[in-house]
Each structure stands twice: as C-alpha cells, then as structure tokens.
Length: 344
Image (cartoon, one colour):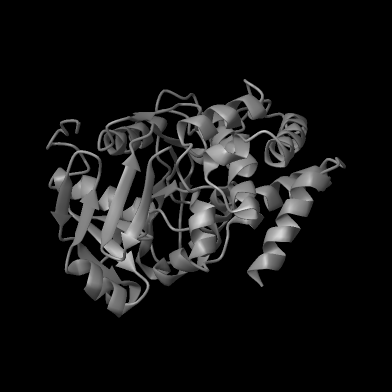
C-alpha cells in the first residue's frame, strides 16, 4: 500500500536522479513515478538508457505495472543535480559519482542506499560540502530480464544523516566537535554554501521514506547500518560459497556450523569497534535467513550473472577492521579470499 505524499513536498518540485538503475534503483524509480515526482535514471551506456526508457515492468505478488522512466547517460546531463539517490553496487559508486561530478554542486543532496560500509566515508572525503543521507533497506527485488523487475518483498527502509549537523538553535560553541558541520564552505566555482541543519536533512530523508510503504527516518542510522552490514557479512558470502538460497544456510551440518563461526567473529570484531549489536548477530542472521528462506542473496545473483562481488566491502572490510584492532579474522578472511579466487 502506497502512502500519500504531500504535493507541496520538496520532492515534488526538485530534480531527482537515480545513479544505478539495477533492481533496487528501478524499484525506487517506480515509487517516484507512482507519486508523479520527476526522476531520471542515469545509465552507463546509451544502449541501456534507450532500452530502459522504452519502459519496464514491475511485478509483485499482487500486480504487474508498466513504467516509462526518463533515462540519460552522464554524457547527456544538461543541468546540475539537486538530489542523487545512489543505488549502484559499492565497488561501482565512486566511479559512477565521478562520471557526473561536474553536475554535483555543494548543495546537491546525496542519498546512499546500498550494502557495505566504507563508501559513505569515501563520498564524504570526495564531496565534503555535500549533504549526505544514508539509507538501509530490506526490500527484496531482482531482474527477471533487463526490463522486468520482480519485487519479491517489501521490507523496512530507513534513512538518516551520515553525520548529524547541529540544528539552528546551536550556540556555536567551539567545544562542540560538530562545529565544522555548520560552517560555510566555499569552492572555486561557487559562492559560500552553509551546511544543512539536521531539520533540513530530516525533511528530505523523511519525505523520501514516505515513498516506501515501510520507510521511516532514523536519528541514529549508523546503528542500523552496522546491523545490516553484519547480517550481509553473515549470509551473502556463504550463499555464494555453497550456491544456496538463504534458508539453506540453516540446514543442519557444515553450512550452519560455518555460519556460526562467521557470526562469532563478526560479533567480536564489531564489538571491538565500539558497535556492539543486540541481539547477537547469529540470532539476527538466523531470523533473516528464515524470513527470506526462498530468496537468493544479491551477491549470489551477481555471482550467477558473472558480475563483480561486493565481498571486499563486506567481509573484506570486516577484516580491515580486525587488522586495525589486532584481532583474529580467519573465517571471514578465508571466505573473502575464496570468493575473490572464484571471481578471477
């Protein structure tokens, strides 16, 4: 069931671009179009842009709907982007942003909706002046064909600020470590631009969340980011290793034992990084595997389609944290190495 979106909302009078027209990006394009909000899908090639602009079908358990989005390539952009929803894979993100870099202004809102941890820091380093919102989703969707998306399940979606700027009531004390988030910044090509307040980010992110039947704003988004990261580390790589659906990881025997060992390491490493998760990640992973028992993980879908895997941004990134903390990470390191060898 779709929510009603206020037509005075900043979404309805802004230009939105979706960078990464895969299953999730195309699903979100359908949500914009359902609410008559202008949106453009940025495609990598003119061929894919032309194909997708002919229309795509979004299928779910209740219905099948046809949409005709506006599609462009970075070469054919003609105006600055006000808002960019980034739904491409983690390893593709910085190159994709670089391709539209000349159209990103300091006021451009960047919304990152993808798996993994680490990309947000890269974006913030490359675009330090830009408002950055993080998104986490449990939506499940996959491509049946290039122009046919199967929306398997509507999951919870949360948006929140990457770093929480101080609001307008701040007294500007130099003792506050977030003071730098309120200062104005100046680039060579643009006049000074004030950093956004938390209220302005909440307005954009909250309105965006309204497009999802189960979307909401979260003032502590990093807690959910780490939780989703940990679950993806626990499930995705193992489904590729064993070439199985999510629920099959719970079969009694080697797969379930492997899952337990992976989760034990994840808990230890994330706790050492001051991000203790409750409940323990094995319990959460089991619950998710049961809820999505018949689903193929996104990483397994990528593997079957001979696409690059996000393993370095999941279990590989976990190993990086472990190395920084001088912690053992044998199980996750071995899994990362095995999948990287397979991909070569």
